[in-house]
Amino acid sequence: MQFSKAASIRILSATGGLALAMLTLPAHAEITILDKHKDGNSLLDPLSIQVGGSIRPGFAWNAGDEPGYYKNGYDTGTRFRFTGDYALTDHTSLIGYYEWGVDLGHVLKWDAHYDHDSPSNTQRQLYGGIKDDTWGTLTFGHQYGVYYDTVGVKSDVWDNDGHASANWIGFGGDYDGGERPKNTIKYSNTFGKWTVRADYLLPEDETYVADSMRYRRNSGMGLGVEYAIQDDLTVSAAWNQTNATVKDDYAGGQSRKYRQQFSGMALTWQPDNWYLVTTATYYDHYVPSKRDTADASHYFAGDGYGLEGFAGYTFKINQPYLDSIMPYVAQDTLQLKGSENYHANHTYLGVWTTIGYGFSFYLERTIASTSDNEPDTTWFTVYYDF
Image 1 (cartoon, rainbow, N blue to C red):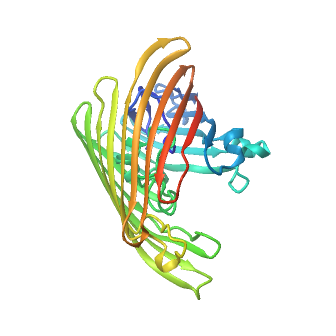
Image 2 (cartoon, rainbow, N blue to C red; image 1 turned 90 degrees about the vertical axis):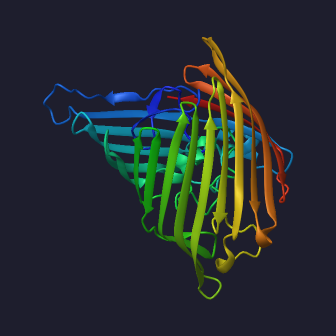
Image 3 (tube, rainbow, N blue to C red; image 1 turned 120 degrees about the horizontal axis):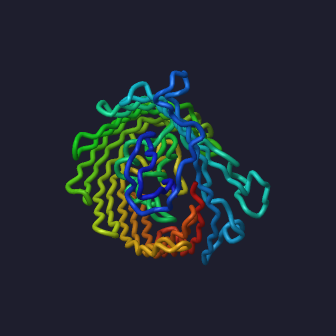
């Protein structure tokens, strides 16, 4: 799961401001290491710095071939956050945010508990900017894009999710605008019941697709809008376009320019203790081809669509070591058209349990029906959020 879940209280949003969380999710409080002093005269008095994080050990079991670290226990996405806010006035601040992902098994050299081909740590986000109560928020850097903020985050709420939304099924969410594109300018603001967002993706250096092929982002942009029909019902829509070049060093320098596009919508309803959401996203030259013969001229599937849905109900227990239980069911479908002949359907049955004191866990079963015979899998993930 790519979304860092937070409590149903005021939390730091992806743009460094304050937002209300969508779900009753694992509570954690940022640790303030430097607080503002409004009445002081020092240069540092307007500055606040906070740290936080999420440590996430987990296990997975399936009926097919699986990496050994799945059943031995591995790090499913530990991350640490650092947030800064410098008040220029009562209504305007300079903001900064850094999120560092760490594979603890890799860092500690627990050989049977990590993928030896993956990095031990990675930059998840790094951006800065300015926010104003009236004029909105403008940021630059490595950050969540418009699609994720507007559509993708709505269904990024169960454990083994993200298989049909644009979040991470393209070339890579750090590059193509699907999740956290690097080198991006983003603006967002809220006007009554409306929230608008726009981003522009600056060129990025080439990165290797495989042994012989390279991907380069030339430019990109996105637009998003949300409308709160009522307090518990929101409709959202987003569009993104990324201009990219794919080169193949082993095919005589073969290259092709692509105009990658995707657009999506989400409907989110939260009556009482329910969380209900459905999303739909259309793709054009966005999802890499599933054919074995893919090359630079046919690296992306022509078009396709993805559907996601989730329904969960939170039972509040409010006991010292058992805060809440949320059983849920989810479904997703990814269909690639044309000569791809690829489909993937997943049904998810799970329960998310909040213990308290920052601890929670997911127990989830993925039932798969795919053209590449993906096995069914059981997931168990523990969260410690602080």
